Amino acid sequence: MIGYTVRISNPHSHEAHVEMEFTATANTHYLSLPVWIPGSYLVREFSRYLGPLRAFNSAGAEVAATKVTKSRWELACTPGDIVRVRFDAYCHELTVRTPHIDGTHAFFNAVNILPELADYDGGYVVNIDAPEGWETFTALPHDGRGWVARDYDHLADSFFEIGPHTCIEFTAAARPHRLVFWGDDAVTVPTERLCANITAIVEVNKNLFGELPYPRYDFVFHITADGRGGLEHCDGTVLATPWRYFDTEEGYADMMVLIAHEHFHAWNGKRLRPAALGPFDYSRENYTRSLWFVEGITSYLDELVCLRAGLMSREDWLRRLEATLNAVRSKHGRTQQSLSDSGFEAWIRHYRPDENSANRNISYYSKGALLALTMDLEIRVRSGGRHSVDDLLREMYRRFGHAKRGYEDDCVAALVLDATGVDLSAELEEWLHGTDDLPVEAALATHGVLADLSPQDGRRFGLTTRTHENRLFVDSVRADGPNAGGSVYPGDEIVAIDRRRATSSTLNDAAKLLQPGTPTPVTVFRRDRLMDASLCVAAAPAEIRLKFGDDGSPAVTERLNAWLPAATDSADISR
Image 1 (cartoon, rainbow, N blue to C red):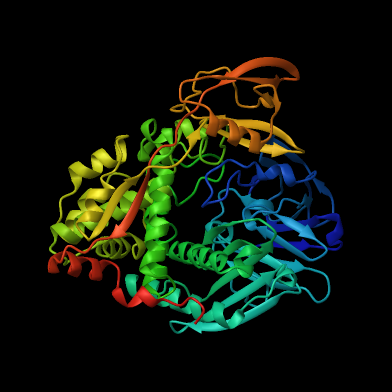
Image 2 (image 1 turned 30 degrees about the vertical axis):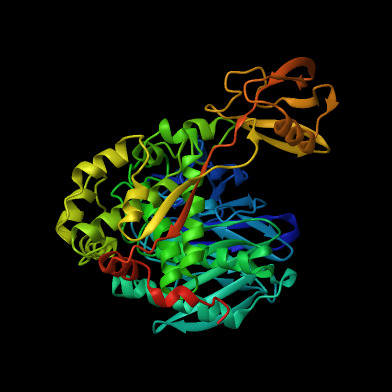
């Protein structure tokens, strides 16, 4: 058993003092720290947090420790010796993926600061030495020696939230669950409502897959002014929740979708996973073309789970779908990048957006959700209502989740056929590897949801801008907009529009007054040089509007009710 002790002696220093202890079995051992965290596909170089690493033997003599790569150390050991490795870790990056320590709490994922011993496949135990009154919250079991992981993959999947936190325990689907809050002093947390709503989500997910795959599950809330997102773990999730989630009904509904999304990952993404995502190589990128399934299927089901749980009405669900459909169709990148490539290139694109991302990339979350919806409705129609995407998920979980092995990227079409009797091989080949728009509207029409193009008022420059200290900057230029290839660049500060001082409001006013194709002069600062340029406008693109149709067809009505349970029309998320 390899042991770690993490000491937080002065949280105001933002440092964790780490000691790692193991018994040497060879003359040379290697330690390595992951460069990425599963669930977030970007090389983040966690070793940058670590100070100098030193090692000592059981007699207290220093052991030679040489850094041989950016995240790997070589130790000169004597077999049988107890080796103690010590270093400090600076923890002041507040996200659900990175470590953060201050006077109110300590948070880290194991991959952030706990190195792995190469060629060791045994267990790990972690002890936390924190300020008095601080409690450790982690999904790992405690056996009297400390928090125990069966191997490094188990440890790497674990987070540690430490502090004098509010913790609410409740039972959902006959299993213990916990809510742990950091930052709840800034908001009013409706704990009873949260427990009831999360219980409904847990029960819907359990009913879909037939079981809960974990002994206990933790929801850790990081409540801040504007952070938003989550990271999935096998037995818990850490959620970045902005104040608006607790202050408004719209925000609370968004929080329910986020919770449903991350909880769904306990199956899809963790136990049910592509072969490339486990066992992991923590030293480099792990490539898969199946992130559309891991995240897209989950992004489709998260809102549908809220609907099934009675936390969202049909109309609310339809408005969210409408927003997703318009968001995807508004991105020129959908014509440039396939869903398959979107997941494969996540390491260099999705987590590193720039001013041209909307013109080159498409999200495997949002377009993946639309593919999942289209696939679900096709399965329902072609199977005569006997099957759905739920059957596909159950079959995949049975084959791969229970067997604890990953699936190959190209297996989904065959599994759809096995699970539902529907052959979508040709369609999935086109949908995954092509760049045409998905036939979402046609699929929706088979279930009584009608789509219309709605003209929008006004004109658009096709720019994304931001205001900073009353100065107007161009963030991006749409590749399919009226100023593509024009004389205004991303990064320009627009100083004047037609000799008038530029603000976001004067830019909007100019858009209303100009005729399409007629350029207007603008003055910009580009790299601190004053330059003349021009802008053109185009008519605002039409947007898709969705509505429930009433064609009187019993078959369509039956399909709609089977897909979107009618009982949720009067859903009340405040129950």
